[in-house]
Length: 293
Image (cartoon, rainbow, N blue to C red; front, side):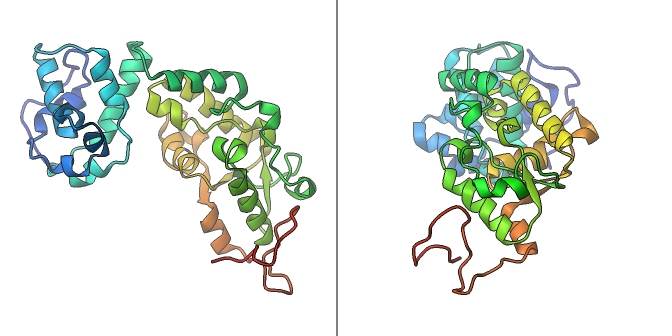
């Protein structure tokens, strides 16, 4: 933050964390953030913009407003795109402040989050994913002929972390990523049914206790596999392993080398067959399949 104000609070103000309270009064109400806010354009109310939320927090800290479900929802529906951070003339950490408030409102004060988040949480606790799929089906996408050299029983320093969406919904992403890694000669293993959701939905939902539990499970699974590098084709999973896990209270235990699958492929060597194609193991290809754009 580049704006400097005197009398920075050292204690929470009506429950609002001290740093967030300071940022609220640092906002100049210039409105640059409004032009970038999808939430504002989707709903059309000033209260849905970053500027409007800072102003509401001021009124709340002054005792002129109270929390209701509408305002709780207002802080929950932020898409976390972080464009407001880039446009803020005072360089305020807007999105991180909303994230901090989510954890306080939902995890600590037990206010209600959105019903879909509750459904995801129930599925996550029961089966380890947010799509209500059975844990036994998590590895159904994995090519059978990969099991000897990349399956859960194979020991390697690299782990391919597919994530929930690629495991249950967009299975072609997981299969293509694994096949490309294999074609590039990358020695990797896969957690299989021991893999859990990365925890992103629980983090943004404010259910931080469940997020912490899931994070610990994933870190322990990678540790038990003997790997020190995580490869992901999911941007949310990559963000969790690369940015969020290492900054958690778990400290060094949560730190791993993290590679996007494209970075890994760039460092590997793709093996072409005699027709100049990259073979997709376990699938029959048409003449138009297998090429890289």
